[in-house]
Length: 88
Image 1 (spheres, rainbow, N blue to C red):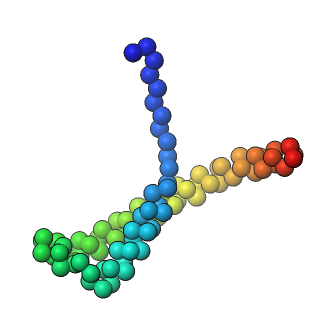
Image 2 (cartoon, rainbow, N blue to C red; image 1 turned 135 degrees about the horizontal axis):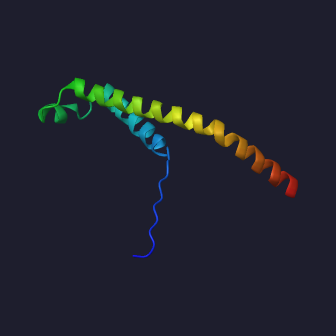
Image 3 (spheres, rainbow, N blue to C red; image 1 turned 30 degrees about the vertical axis):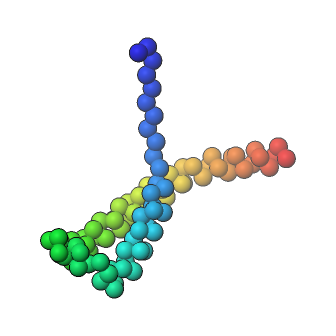
């Protein structure tokens, strides 16, 4: 192999998916839907609550990075908008 390349990217698109899953889970958890299956397999209610908390923490941490990156990318986006407006 004479040439090799590596690409690393950062994407927070999973937030949308996590938010959707969290909303659906919360609605079902309030009604105790399907919880008997999990309890029958040895889980307790606290483990499910902890999983929700972990997911919210992950989403919050990701949002902080998105906000920080948005401030840096804002300058570039303004420059692009100015260039597009000028070329029209």
